[in-house]
Length: 187
Image (cartoon, rainbow, N blue to C red):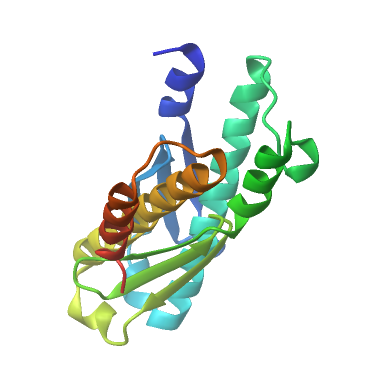
């Protein structure tokens, strides 16, 4: 593995929710852990907790993106940030469409759902009664699984976009399989 790939795989971002009661770590572009301050889980209702998770996820992936940018700069590579910095028309279209990728992820019990556009604008929905139904650890597992499902779908959609624009050799059957895998984890 090259230096950039190793550093990206090891990129770790730790963030806290705006109210300071939830902390999470993203490692290598995946949610590694999430935890509540002692007693915090019991004080939330579904609406407020969903809001805090939305902000937490947004902070995590904005900071992750900044970390990726810093790694690229540290090794002297330029990472185009928008269509104006594209090297050609296909690259411009890719950079213009990338922030519009919409992804959804749902936990295995279908009690927590995340949606994100471009991994920047996150939305979280928690089914009413979930916090009384699940223990703190069960809820954390549901949240992490929902976030991982969203990230997986985002990777699929990014691959489909690359294929569409750059003409990678994906057959229609492969594209359909990718979409079906992503759809399996939707709400």
